[in-house]
Picture (tube, rainbow, N blue to C red):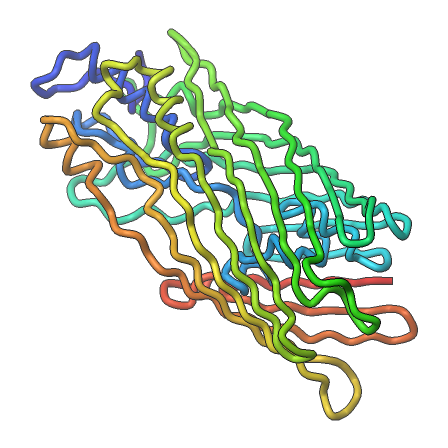
Length: 381
């Protein structure tokens, strides 16, 4: 194999095993960047997380706990059943994690189309010589529909095209270390997701239900990237979410959510790439990640609009492989990592005039290590 990450090693293991493990470990990167090197035979993907796609702006400002709220076009990704809560036509756009969407439809059936791109996370620092970087870039475009068959039940589904491109950064290719065979590989996949929104308490005259249950399922997606000898499969794991949203008063809203991430799918992909023997000492267990969010809304005294302030917390799993075998280099590269707490913060200004409404969102996706700002605009007409 002529690619840098899959080049023959120089350690105590056989070149065949090293080559197979290096190439197979690409299954662990999901959507995020991966570090690679041809100067050492230690595992090169130990610092990278196989996390699912997340959306920014208002949803992220509440710690991502949005599946039971889902009251704007971002519901197309988070929970398409929530599209039925959009009363009129809507156009929205956001920075940070780029987003653009349009939504329209009838009273009980709503449609939305969207485009978004996965934000690339910076690599964690690693000791030693500088390493080149393979950067997977993923954009997603899809359409969703939500309908309300019963007064207290809303259902929805979406279909999306997800396109993966791999680029190389950090070095100039040479004859001994040419451009990796994966670079420039482009693959697209079509996937579907579904969701439901249930009013646990009947809706009031002046607003929606004060207590709602949200459910959604986003199946994983795999890309098969061609190489000289065989294809390499990359995997983004499936996610099932359940959430509660409680409108405690006209001012306060609280939401809680749990995401079941099926990281075992990443390990299964690794086994398909390198075989059971080479992958037997790697593990990445399924996890349930909790999220909490709170939002406070109050009208301005001038009567010109409403201000919303929100905050959230996301208890986030490492999402990286662990190695429990006897190879010390791999144990160091794939250690047991700790969960981390991500704090978010955001605010909105909302104004309505003769049936037209404009909302401006400013959110920090990570207060502690950020700010990772996202600015969004929502126009309803």
